[in-house]
Length: 312
Image 1 (cartoon, rainbow, N blue to C red):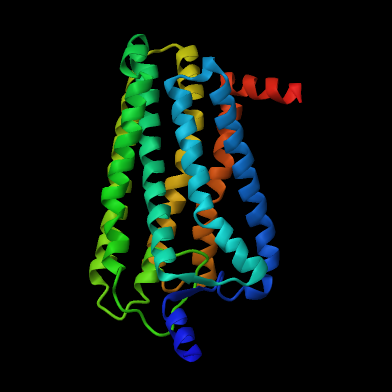
Image 2 (cartoon, helix red, strand yellow):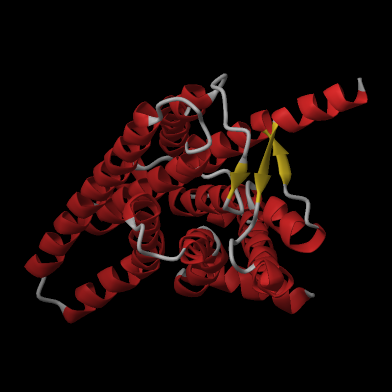
């Protein structure tokens, strides 16, 4: 009976190896991981606290920054604690249900994060191209509705990913060479044909990122067009200052994230540990730097942060 229970328990588990080939260095790798995560939590929680406390900051732009902070916290928390358990305590096992749940939340929050960046691009467009109508176009209630729409989109697009794998038989050797339950890495553990999962994951990556990048590109195209019409250097500088933080956030998310997704599927010539490190960094560095960038480049938020620091 004991042997049967052990077999049953093992059959419902996956093993996450961490970073393959660098197991001996896991403790050292955990140092930057934990530092990035702590900075992420402190920075984003500070943004949420200050915007929540200050009535003057409860405006659409700062509500969007709060939404970005929430997605940053949730996204990193969905995988970093488990990765640190692997690095520090060698706790590599995770249940199949837990793995699929982690997969869903990780990709759903990433999708919401992308939608927030699109909304922020629209916010910048209205602020620069239609400043007189900004207060009537972008109201808090409309931002809340856009946030709800982003959540619904994420659930509808991402839920099929774990559902396509749920209930399928998996191989006896369930070792996933990763720090978290990456979709394609889990799909490769299945005994069944995974063509549908592969195709769906790739299509969703291109549909979500492609659609969002088109909307962002359209917003910035209209912004550039409006700025070029105005020959004033002061107007050019103001527009640049308004968009700098958002552009930095975009550059940290899309190029590295897309490169990581493509190399994990098609980069067979790249060493596995490079895949894993790049994938982890792409979801760690952005959440860590976003509150710093917005805290420095957004004057009102910067001033409020300094006010609270001086009070301490």
